[in-house]
Amino acid sequence: MECTPVILAHETPFSIGAVEISPSTRELRNNGKSAILEPRVMQVLVALHRAQGAVVSKDDLVACCWDGRIVGDDAINRVIGRLRHDASDHADDAFRVETITRVGYRMVENGANRTPNRVDRRFVIGGAVAAAAAAAATFGWQNFRSSPANKEAAELLEESRIAMLQGLPDQLGNAVAKLKRASEIEPGNAEIWGTLALAYTQQRGSVPAAQQPFVAERAKNAGARALSIDPDNGNGLAAQALSQPFFRNWLAMEKAARRALQRQPRNFALNKLLGFVLGSVGRPAAAIPYLDRAQQAEPMAVGLYVSRMFTYWYAGRLDDAEKTIEHAASLWPRYFGVWFSQIYLLAYTGRAQQALTLVEDTASRPNGIPDWNFDFTSLQVKALATGRPDDLEKAMESCREIAKRGEGFAENVILFAGAVGRIDDAYRVLDAYYFDRGFKIADKRWSTEQGMYGNRRERDTHFLFHPALLGIRRDPRFPGLTKAIGLDDYWQRSGTKPDYVA
Image (cartoon, rainbow, N blue to C red; front, side, top):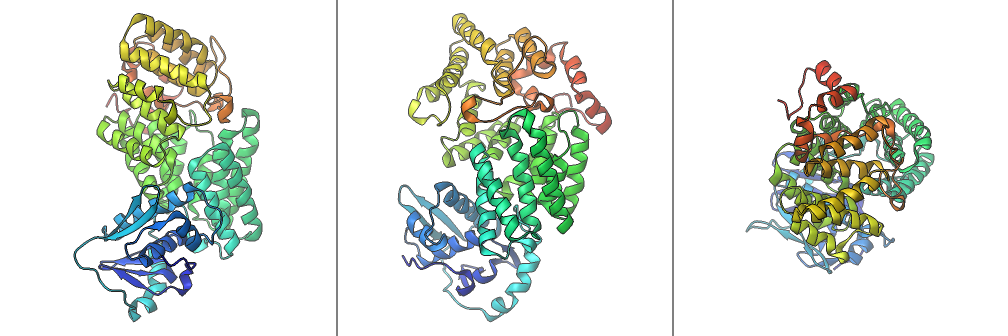
């Protein structure tokens, strides 16, 4: 393996089958169509192609494509995932990237005939023009016309995007700090400011409720700065939409997202936002195309896999839900959102014993979660697996205490209580969750160790449409609940109905 650094400007164009690739313009051309690849993705493509089918270790990739800097597995995995997506979406699977467990990666060129490397003068001359045209149609977060010219700023932007895909508090803090530095280097770059605005909107859930308005204001200001530079910056438009309240304000959010998507139809954040809004009002079937488009734009957004799994499930597409979470688990087996989602999918679709086996496999559990959380989950899953009254009572006793610890736990308790027919218990928690009646739920999302916070003014509604909550929706109290929290107003003003009614 040749480990000299991949400098795109110095690389000669080459072909893989019928696909023509120009590293210097980051362009991939196939069947008269072209696409622009991210810089790091193109570097990895060049490195794998250089190897001519040999295995390239992660250390070799770092040496070639990251200048030997310390790079985590998440960064490499994201780029490999993006390259696989580009191979499928833009190259008709002319090649594939195989993972060689604990060794590295290799490129396999598909098809019987391999076109030898060649330099095409027309391709080199026309590359810059084609690249500009393709950039407008490229999926992804970045608006390539405003990508940073400064190398340090570009690297800070890329590193921040990778951190934001994981969405964990420490990573979001790092992303904000790096983006602020990038904005100092290139203060006139709209993409940096737009991405900073999105980082602030994500970070809002990582600070206590009292601090959230200040973070929201920073997001609003950064978004406004992005739009003052480029009125069509997709991330700035998304941040602008997210600056308004969400709970009870779904119609305004939907309209804002749809208006912005008319200007940036393939933007990751805008598609994710509209999908989330539609799921919140009980319209999962309508949400799916937008969430799918967002995932196409950013294949390594781990939280989006979880959102898509639940949305497929709520829409009655169980096979798609299973495929989605299985794929996520193959990439992030110990990421807490993926791990718990697997447990709940199995537990509430008649496979609770299989879920219990996973819960009790302590070696595969995600890090950073306190033992009492696993114990709580185990009690619930065991009760679903055995159906014994004593197991059910133990689980419900634990639920009554756990529901007070955070809004995420309260949602899980509502789900469990509704699924096992304890409808009155479920409605007691719903009263506390939406109306602060009966008991107080802590201003946290999960445990203290996870560092995620809730906000009683921004409660979730997705889980109300869970298939396991059919008993809750059939209860005569449910119409009063949907009216009180504003869902009826949305359905009436938008002229729509939730999927469970329609």
